[in-house]
Length: 258
Ligand code: 23J
Ligand code: MN
Image: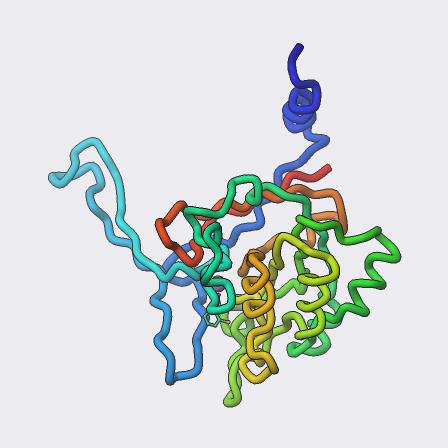
């Protein structure tokens, strides 16, 4: 007897009642990269160099080499990225169990709030309101914060001012709630990093990184097309490159949804 659930999945995908949504932005030399305060080392942008293209260097083949920071474009944050998560034996890109790389998603739409206020912070109160409408955020699921930030121009996407970037993200208490009271798998965003632009000044600084990774949880940044997903019911495939001791990697993030 074949597995009827998987048989039904492939047949519904073929027939279109289950759709595949690409949550990934294009990766090129134009892809915006996070800038940190100037006392810290900066992450290099994506760079591509041709090895050959049907020429003397390779008459029948085209290929390139590329380089970039691990946290470039649509990318995965492993627990080992942060000082609070550095002790986990299963916390780097090569050691995270593959079972964590396919999981349900909860999508919380705060696009109206973020349009109004670029420093908007997601709160546990907002999540409890969302739960009253859509049901509980289950352990081992992704919490994806929809801000429509991926629709902005590159300059407005990073949104720098003299006092640093102004982009939405989670509050400290929101991250405490999702880590301790909901035990989520990880937190994903449309902005360049999982933390708000001003989160360097929070206490603790960078709460998404501090609290997610400190609890062996994952991050996804620079997602797009979250507006094409239902609040609940989509399944996300987010598998980073298996870089030995990697802190993260660019990746293709795919959603299955009815
Ligand atoms: C290093 C330091 C601070 C931040 C980040 C990286 C990221 O956002 C990232 O991509 O993980 S805020
Ligand atoms: Mn990152």
